[in-house]
Image (cartoon, rainbow, N blue to C red; front, side, top):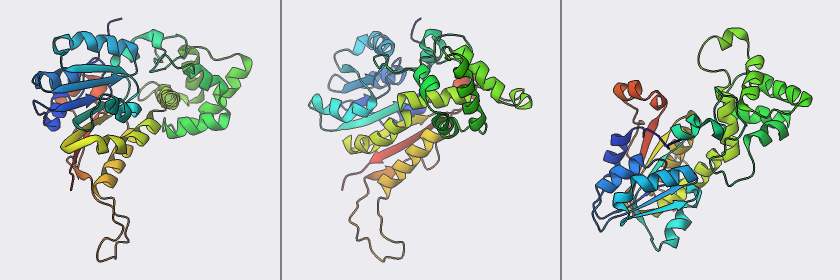
Length: 313
């Protein structure tokens, strides 16, 4: 299947990057190179673009889409948690802009063999990086009921998490749960009929939770952002698009801490902790997709864009 992914909040992201023609820019979630292509169009021969993605299909698609800019582009197969190291390995000390478009690509969702979908009956997989051994099947069949409950509650924010975990454990005692269809049926049975009749697919939150746990999405984000902000040049910006409240909360919290890191009690007349602000939040409220974009791309509905600008003293 051809790698297709419609970039969300595309123009809003490019506008907020404030691209300099001779700047250095990084996309840590390269995907199909939607944002990357627009950045490259604004760069001159003295500019530079680095794209990072852990998905082999994304790397191949991006390379093709950026072929007219290969003189100024470098594409790396890696997780964005390794961004700082990868950039330093290129001999670059700082960059002028960073983009992260989090979540799952349309390609990953629509390619049923990748095992992300709850609408098909295919082997449970959900690996964003297919070089790793562990799959969603290992989580579903190997985690304790307590741990399944925890991830479905915390990462899926599903109020039926306890019952879903209980049903999964009961079902796998009879036979391993091997496919997405089998898991979706187990989840469906754990949710009251009247709840199933409204809203989206009953397994959506459970699948999201397992995917996040498998790919360590929240830990990677939480552990990487400070380093990315430190990588920015004076005036450089980082633009992050999130798709659910857990990601957005992490981004908002870390941006606030970098803007105001002071830990002194509020009644102190002056700061004595010595922690200095690293910049300012550009988006006091997140930028949301327009009505037109949500009409055209239904997957954009939950997207939020937050922007932070580095300021060095």
